[in-house]
Length: 255
Image (tube, rainbow, N blue to C red):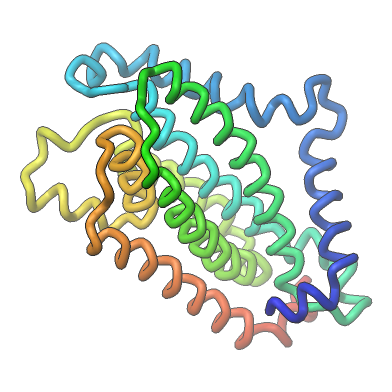
């Protein structure tokens, strides 16, 4: 896959530029929306839920921002990736190029938005009095894991969307449900220990919790959490690659 990306480097770069420009086309603020949008979303959630859940939660604003930031990245990458094949059917139906290039470019565009929001995240963390430690560099680990995970999910969704257009509406409902199961604005204190462990069945929550342990709790996550994050990423990517390999030749007949 990496060899193909290098080989079609020019195409890949142009796809990323196109997707990024298209996102902010005809907007007044342009790229600034990557910084403003998560802050507006954070403000609304803190305003609504701070009195319910924020009283006994340290650094509640950062707590909510962590969940919002990572979940938004997941949602943006996967929902955008779902349409990657169909939106570029006019290209790969005429030119023989690796079809996952379109999905990769969409994921890179989502990653850029995430990186811009991450700058605001760290600024707010400093203003909230959070002390940065050497092990904050470990935050790269869940970022890489969720990036791989998003790519795998995008592969599955984009393939399904070619054959089954209703998946767009079904996935929208699923994302809404997953949002509430990702422990973004509430805590798990009122849940039993067994119930708390069940939340780790949600990969997005695992990545969010990894972030929170380092940034808010100032502790290095357990080896079990490291393995779990990598497991979700590798398994999802393997499934996505298998789906693309199996149905690659059929895409042309359905787009």
